[in-house]
Amino acid sequence: MRSGINIFERLAGNYQLSLVRPVLTRKTTNWRRPYEPSLRLAVALWWYATPSEYRTISCLFGVGMSTVCVFLREVTSALNDCLLERFISLPKLDQLQLTLDGFAARGYPMCGGAIDGSHIPFIAPRDDPASYHNRKGCHSIVLQAVVDHSFCFTDVYVGWPGRTHDARVLSNSTIFIKAEQQDGYLFPMSRDISGVEVPVHLIGNAAYPLKKWLMKGFTQHHRLTPEQSTFNYHLSSARMVVENAFGRLKGRWKCLAKRCDVDIHIMPDIVIACCILHNVCEINRQLPC
Image (cartoon, rainbow, N blue to C red):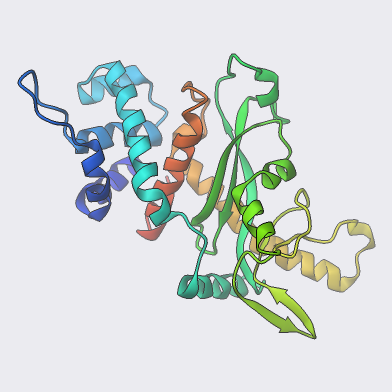
């Protein structure tokens, strides 16, 4: 709850709201005055940040329950349309160098980000509910994300049913297609180490395929040499940032930690909107609840 209030104050007082204000502004007519953009944003942020029901939010803000639903859809669409490219993108130039330095400080060089998946629970849909039933025993969709050294999301891909394997989600994502089309180079930098070209790459867990642009640890742990075990340790330590980022994301925006009862078609947009707001929080050093 505190997170929702604080981030609302930052959005309302800084330039971010000015970017979504035109989209949330409605014309005044002879019939009635429209709701202010700040109220629309506040209602949506409260829904994102708390496990409150529509009826509770309706009473808190003095609007109808159907109006809460409308505000949620409008704000979610506005955030994605106006702020997505500004706040979620793979690092470039100076930002890429900061990311490389950040992961090097964690013991793993030439890393442009850590990738992993997380389950976002929601009430089972009517169509093909079995596909959304994951190994944890609940219904969900998969959020695949790349995270930099400072817990900010740099790429998100949402919507596959919870039963889908991480490798399949990856193979259908835009980041996979982009890397493969660029001959395995996701970033424009590489370094020669002991006669071997090492491009800037992502790091992931054992569920992902080994690629020029995607590194994972050695398997068969009982047969590893000391050097291989050390490599796995450093890679795993650096990869923890993505798991921490998921925890911070769901700690701020409680709607992602409960079983949402929204339409399956809007759920991916809500997840992306929360990722955008998460980055705004991290940039402004706003701690999660």
